[in-house]
Length: 297
Length: 194
Image 1 (tube, one colour):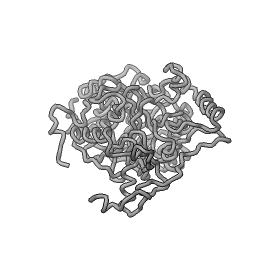
Image 2 (image 1 turned 45 degrees about the vertical axis):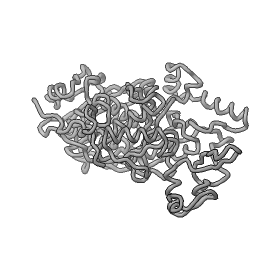
Image 3 (image 1 turned 90 degrees about the vertical axis):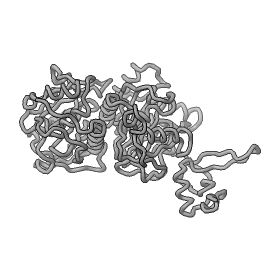
Image 4 (image 1 turned 30 degrees about the vertical axis):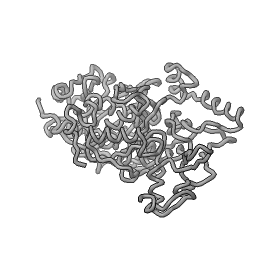
């Protein structure tokens, strides 16, 4: 990639000014030292609306260097609007190499998914977070939730999960499923499907979370205990799918439902586009899939 | 004393930060410094690069007696001020080859804001000598051994007290003249060989 930040005169490397980066970097270091604790930071206005990943973008901009290779996914896909525009943003302002290959990336910014491929040491996963406070919908006052975290008083959350069991017979929460990090802080893993929760546990990669509107940064260091909250008689269970991916036949990946016509036709395909492509290139084929060579023509 | 700042401020700050970030994410693992700055500084080239990368007008620093002469340099290059007391500083710089260490004298954070604590940047001779420490905690698969030269004899006891305050407490960044090694408050020393 020959494009450099010089092409965008007037912008600093990776868009943010150095003072902002230092402030974010100091917050990231604290976040890593206190796994699961939400560090307040002076979130900036970014050239995109809140809700489009301003927190993740600020964290990525603060850690990114010229030798990094960046991957951006939105709901697992490299080719949706949010992912494409954030990738282009950093191509333009930082001149970094970008990729869609999970294994090649050193920094992966994500909205609402963890890639299917196992992450490696020296990879950093940056989550875009809408509501960082797991207790927010149970207790609206920041002063109170802060006290609850200080006292490690998470009974409210257990009651919330218990009410699900009382009403539905099982814990009905399917995304943003709360986790306990390093036996201390209850953390919102961002709206990833609970299918992805087990991947956070003892992950080899560093996980950073940025919430732009809510002005919080938090982190899970590599090889850290991350436990989904549950009860002895109602243990946590990751989502399972009845059918394989229609394109690549994968039985162990998270599937999106895609409507194919207006007569009720539908198919279920991998939400991780790179995972699906890789499998199809390797020759795996689902019930509706075509061999890759044909599909390319 | 006046020393030049970082060669390439934007990229050197980024590289320095990433080394420190990796050091804290993988406690006990010596990480090559991202950049160095100013051989002549009493802080040493790595600790000074960290100072120039993380200090600015929003934070205050503390200097140990043996590093007091660095005040003008840091103030000039970063706009940061020297704190009146150690527990008012966001960052503290000590040289363990000359200075005593008292972790409890620094800011420990509060139960509501455990992040409002001091980060200590400590100069040591090397990561090849010293009693082998066995570490465990977040960032460490199983356990990890490391050596830090010239730790005070009561270091394990002080660190145990720091861990007992968790999630409050201070975080340590050790520096030599070419590498950094992190010891965040979440790390426990499970064995100290003598």
